[in-house]
Length: 334
Image (tube, rainbow, N blue to C red; front, side, top):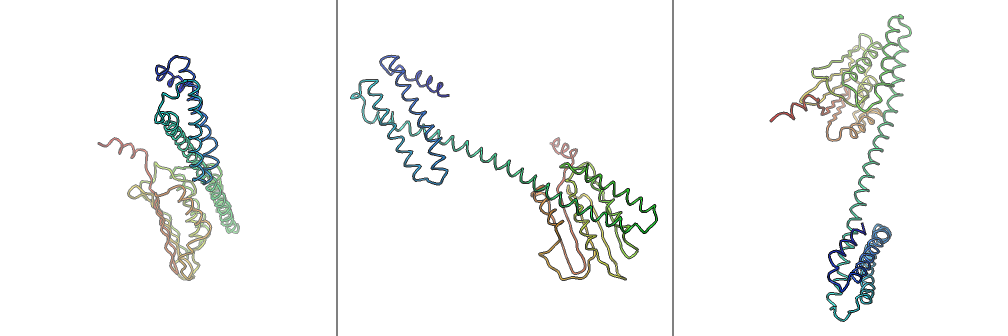
């Protein structure tokens, strides 16, 4: 880089001097002086003073460096050229101080810009790694909770006939396989996520008698797109965890999922035992985790509404999703 600067400077100014040798020496002095200033400001002054918040000292040292450098450079040029008296003070000031001021300032600006872009890249990388680590932690919290709930469901089947127990264990194994092998990626087809939810609800039905109304319904348009795995299950788990046990009354858990206006709409309702309404406490660890996951995975693309009364708990989740075929049609539209 500095060789190119030297060559360009020499080519543009050599005709201004008595000989090519003098032009070479003058160019060498000016380029070397500029390089020392740029490296001194960018490598020492900016990191040690400006980045440490010492703005006034940075400005003072910068101006001193330009002034002292210009004075020393003028002395060297007088020795090389030999006609110091023929050059006016204004020309000396411009050639040795003003030009260096703007050139070194430009170099410092490039340094600040490069450092700013590098810092932005580091911050983006750190934010991505932090989000990935946090998501992995949240998923690890969900999995044990699921396992304990499922094992508890199987436990209640032990006293029943073997056919139901075998079917329950088969369903459980399918759910476990889904968690361990298929749900490890960042996206899962909606059809597989629905199958997982359907199996979970089926196992919960086995634990309930005629006094409980459990329903799971799916609307149209639930195909051709993907979502984050294990994103919906905490809402369903929460519904069964807090399901009411009121003799002689309707105890219900209703799960509905569909697609409306380009969004996945997920509704979960369950009856709960009478308790004081506390808007600040709308769920346990599972719901807190899924709220955080939604903020990380679908920022500005989801809407979560939670309603709680003395005897009913309702959740409505809307996530903006897109199908590749629909995106293609929109792109081709005039």
